[in-house]
Length: 130
Image (cartoon, rainbow, N blue to C red):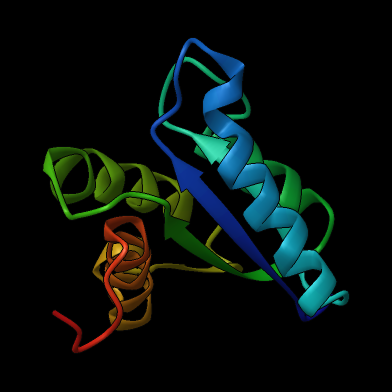
């Protein structure tokens, strides 16, 4: 195995394929920013690949370090219960691969600031304005 690194942008999934558009755009943006980094998508339900399938494919390709980034606004039931079980199963199946789970993307300070800026722009107000 090589020392390759990868990021899996992990979302809930939806029946409507348009739902994944922001994740696809995020993946493409990340690939542009870090061309050497392998970036893939995975979904909990309704869409493919699953997290297990994405991790299996990355490990088959020689990836040794995988960061799973939940594309969720907050740590809800899935991230507190279901996802740690999926990560645990993947770690057991691939002991030679380091698999980490990041917090929900929506809880990152920069993302919160970006959402607040967006909401402020939608309101027509300026920062500190009346």
